[in-house]
Image (cartoon, rainbow, N blue to C red; front, top):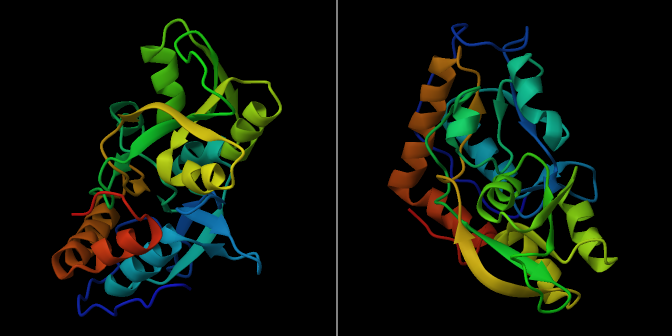
Length: 241
């Protein structure tokens, strides 16, 4: 863990009113493939901003939590079917998703999405790569009528599509693209765009008490500044609360 987590004094009791595994553990589902939000470290363990955040939220709420990884394209269906109890995977709060699941209060502000390419291209008529099921893919489909959307299961595949000439540009969270651009293969082009209403935990609609438990823990981290400290450490340049 790269950050020292501040043990909260907040005491929140988890009850059987929300779905948990048989031993009372709350299972946190993440992708494990979207640094710096979440990724697998060299030991094969979930790491990143959301690992640090999720562990602290569970500590403050006095929840016993375990981490589960799941492919992005099925992450909501597997929440609904009960394979885990909450999604903490860089998931932006949108009206479309909110029709299927509930969200906690946001734990990040809306972050910019950015375009990256090998060279300056006309994105308005180009082939744009994005991870399927993301707000960025929806943005290209709905707001860039003359562009061609090329969707991939992972953000890494979307970036590779640009590197190998399959796509003209990729769109993703700027925090994800920044280290890739720093390596020198791609460059940012065009203007950043703000999409979505921040990032929150996805929770089943039937688990209102679990949602409020996490909301209280999130608010306690906002109140004492520890959430901003995590954002500044893991997502430098991102807006704080």
